[in-house]
Length: 445
Image 1 (cartoon, rainbow, N blue to C red):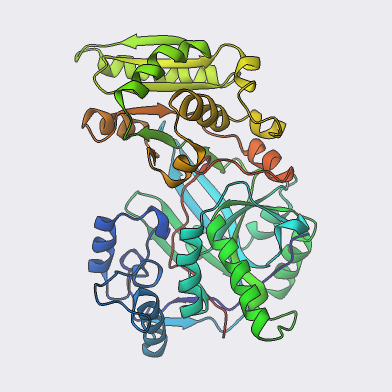
Image 2 (cartoon, rainbow, N blue to C red; image 1 turned 90 degrees about the vertical axis):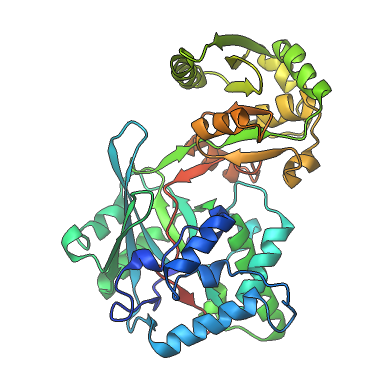
């Protein structure tokens, strides 16, 4: 199923760049404008200039952040700040990170190229909807740079840990080719695997695997569209790099793979909408309140978090906090049949099982009256990774209320993708994020 191959990655030259922390960055779509400025200041060679260049009032068709990215890339290659590896490699990628309870975890995986497939083939499956704006943005960048500047995050199932065991002998913390700790305290290590026999074993072991896109849906669809646009202009031989995309592969059966929730914060709601929510929420949910004073708020919050996690093991459950209230609320579905009655008649069963489906259909659309189109445009909601920050945003007056979530299960991602369906946006938050700037795939090399 998955047709993968090694490649000659473009990497930072250790003789020119002493510290990878100065030149790497998170994925482009999680970087704020303030963070963008900070990465610009870190180094003249920071990858931010490629993946999320600054706009200028004088930008035009010939000079804009996409064309400037191509110039930076060319100049860095010519100056030797970036160099292309001489041998075909796959890049084992390990990340050490801390869980919320303080325990340490390691997620393993590897970076290689995979053949771009139409979704209709069933070989590579998405699980989230995409938007046209981000795809246009990424296509402009690809057309200028002819590179995969960051890897798409994919999952495969390998209960026997076959690939993990093949690569285990290639890694040890003593001989990592690259190692860097990011501002969040996550340590990233890259090991280059050039041994032809080892690579062949990995290629063969992956040949019967379906791939599920975990993160990078916009970038994958962009790579597909870019391939098609090139193919329309010229004939591409089967081994052309335009037929492939750089991807990170993680085993969904590895205990180091975790999914965190993405919480929803709401704004631009009328008083009538807030009032309707408070009066109608009991029609679908059992509501348990956790009132608090300034002295007892921390205790009430911890109790909400614990009860939310506990309830979510067997039922759809959400936390809710509205501006001006001195209470947190736990919402647990009371009547599943009543909730399902508001779903679209043709909705697939795999989607009905998701917390995000219940939240967006029952609470946001049905009760608050925020349309699906408005949700996709984020007219009334934004997404926050940290529950404490979501609550703080409400307290600060930036937002009117927050819905707190439990994480989507990896098995649910697999089920939804396998049935050809897509979750609402930001249904999953695979942690930690992959670092950008460790390896680049130069397509027209």
